[in-house]
Image (cartoon, rainbow, N blue to C red; front, side):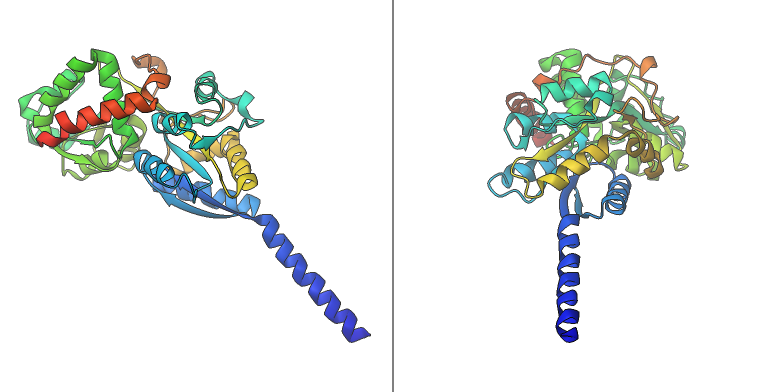
Length: 341
């Protein structure tokens, strides 16, 4: 009898362990922020929730392409971070599903408006401003003027000195493309980019690569989000960061639950976790200097001062639509990229 009881207790304990493991669950996340911030989010969420997170870092364009390709058999539950235009296209194509977090009322107006445009298939988690960065040492050695405006980058003296990402793979660069179109009009924007093409040394795959190259002295000028450039500056590299004088665009970093997510309860827990003020405040620990969407979160002191920057009235509904994105990317590929530099 005692042996039977001991055996029964062992079975119960075993089932209890299995039940606890099942309750903890698992979660598959695509992360389109810097790797360091991705790792911080994974570690904090796993420690707090006990949920096992499988996280892969990809740029916004690459993440969208993966979710689109896996639409019939989703392998991802949550897509966290990355420029909102790509998140909106996923929303408009019904690749993501609606979820309204109880924390949504704590968010900045721009984050709530973004969620409304996405029909709650995505939500804003941070704001990032597009800028120009340059290596001050390299600029002096080459006796080049410091760029302050978009038009300055057309100076023939910058031939082979500028890097920007490919907008087909990079959300950062798509924001730059959409920004120029909104500033100058489509035809004039493409005329500008054709002229700029002569000064581009490389169209990189990721949005952060141009700033990293400029920091190492492999190039001189980078077109990139200011928070990524500021990260290089804080790390001790001789990077100066300016918003373009004519005006500049901005991103709203998105977060979306993938339609057909296999771990939906865990996905919602992560969603709520990512919108919390304390979670967003902790981003600075990963040297992330974006402006948080939760109004109660602490804005990093290094973050761009949006009040002093001339911003375009960025039309997220238009430039996040599949039709507009497809049109602009196809035109950029045929008129700019295919002609080399």
